[in-house]
Image (tube, rainbow, N blue to C red; front, side, top):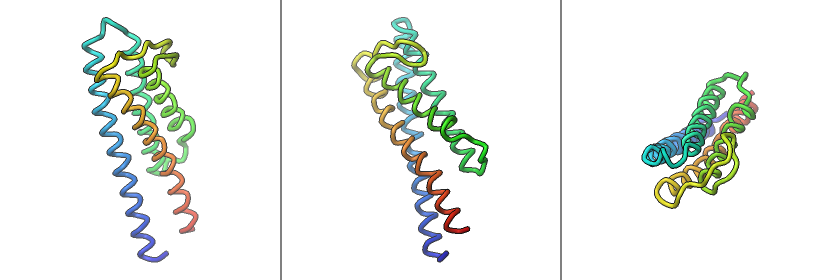
Length: 148
């Protein structure tokens, strides 16, 4: 493998890591804004609290499992531990924005305003994070095949 190819691969990996990191930071900010709103309206609906908590747990777990896999732990089941968690988080997010059924039960949609807009942004970030997560294992597989 040439030096140029190696540098190019490292640059792609670094930019992908930065994109994943930026998505996680943005997601954390949005979730904090939703949490602040959630705290202010606690009496109006406990379902929002449960769904928001479940959303945070799923995104965090998927990120941790992906990092484990990227670190070389091939016992991680990407489908179950990463992608299923992100899909569940996306479902929680949609239920918060639009109302509907989720793992924590029926959820009334968030009222219009800052929390609902922030949650809609979170939904978009989860989709981006899932797409980036798919790219990481595939990039790793390609680099192992080309170097082996």
